[in-house]
View (tube, rainbow, N blue to C red):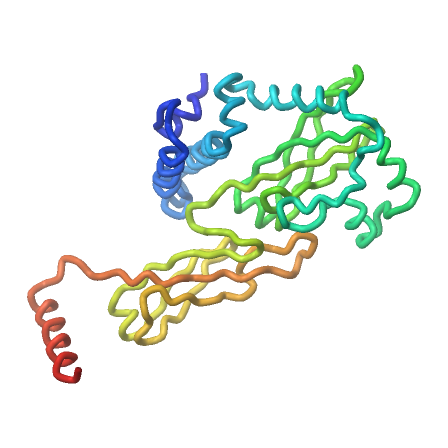
Length: 300
């Protein structure tokens, strides 16, 4: 039997949101692939930690998990099917959902019209008479950057057979993005994926921009040097000018997230310098700092 999400994070069932968040951050740093290159066991543990946090950090998902355990996802589908049966005709997907401020649905009439899809004609009118099924999908920030696929199971409506679908999630999705799925069959429902993006220990995301912190040794901050900056693609080398102050931010254009609906346009990555003070200095090194201090006091 798989370990519970609480066991994965090492917290009790009564753990607060803060306890869950702190446990996740600690474990994400410990098992991150960048820290454990080539370690498959650490990679599996990192995925388990992210999966556990994705559920326990969400009050609604956590409530369902506490009630249904490993079957909490099926409980969500049952509840969704019940809602679909109760939904009145005429309330279909001809509504632009801005997904918490991240733009129109992928696959909405707006996107269909731009990319040569069904547009606003008779098919759009017909779609208003179809049932709407929303399927929650969780992805990592890396998957949101690159795009990915998921296999989902749809429970049949009105006695129809259940079926599994492989769906594509495009690069650039964010929390609240809704992706319209067009099944190969002629089912009686319109299917939307509702995306949630799990947090990443390395980056903070704001729209299509990413923010990260870079440790810079004191000597490089004073004299100038180079720093390795992680990105969701390849790491880049950042030139640190002499006398760089702690907290200074550098903008790396085009190193952020893809913009949803555009494979070329990307946001920026902002790297903030964290100057690290050396430890374990020898007496000779300490004397050099004393001389520097004395010189600055004379000049000041």
